[in-house]
Amino acid sequence: MLMSTIQAGIVGLGRLGKRYASDLRWRVRGVSLVAACSLQAEELAWARSELGIAHTYLNYEALLNHQGLDAVFIVSSTSQHVPQLIAALRAGLHVFCEKPLGITLADCLQAEAVAARHPTQLAVVGFVRRFDPAYAYAKQQIAAGLIGRPFMLRSQTVDVDAVAGFQMEFVKSSGGIFHDMNVHDIDLARWFLQSEIQTVFAAGGAFKHPAFGEAGDADNVVATCVMENGHIAQFWASRTAAHGHDTQTEIIGTEGVLCVGRNAAAQRVEILDRYGVRQECVQTFYERFEQAFLLQTQDFIDCLLQGRRPALQLRDATRATQAAIALSASLFEGKGVVQTQPLNELEG
Image (cartoon, rainbow, N blue to C red; front, top):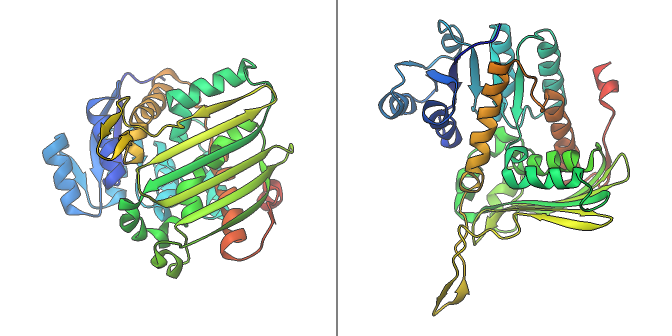
């Protein structure tokens, strides 16, 4: 039976969780944000004072038991995504989960198995770039044959150095730079090149912030991937940009090239002063993808209201995690070229 309004709850009210909560409260149609959960009392106080949410919980199970809840948005730390998603499904709720789904393949496959036992409930992991109007337009143009047959993708996720300290706090629980950052580029490669990543090679290091290396991570990495159909994907992730957040993607085809986001300018104004000619750049991923986050959330709610299946499936998230694991093994374990294992062998 279709619903007229979705009663939603959210777990996780950190930097991104606050953005989701604000969108759900004020900007997304067809949903009412009725409950919030966080381990931090000050975050719950923010939800009550800024969003007017009366029902706040320090305990996730209490959130799931909130009377009349239809769906839960999981914007907690990565290590909690799979257990919280599974608990929500078992509680009879629909689930939207921030990326990545999990750090291990075992966790991702367990989430898929539980979701398969609850076929009437939606379980979606957010890959926000698919909802960005520029990326969506590029996808449409490829489908129309504008650049012929796409065979190569170059994509980067570059953060401003100012947030490196914040990222360092979560290295041990986030799975590292490939899970935390390049997972978006991995999903774009699968989406645009229509194939799975088969073989990878990665290199990098902690070139500016040694603390990342001490924690078993890096602040800059590059990778080359060969897809099952022979197409090629190249990735760069950086936590040390001086100019701002700089997400770019090139899709190369037999008849042309599409470039998405090549100019990181915050607006179309050039500044001419004693420093020369320059443009101000966006500083955060949310500033760049604010509209995409809103469209992504609205699409999930619309799926529930319209009885429509989402385009993104949990298997998409599992594939992204699989590639991130292979890239991490290539870089951090010194394995050089790594070939991914067929998922059906792991499921067996």
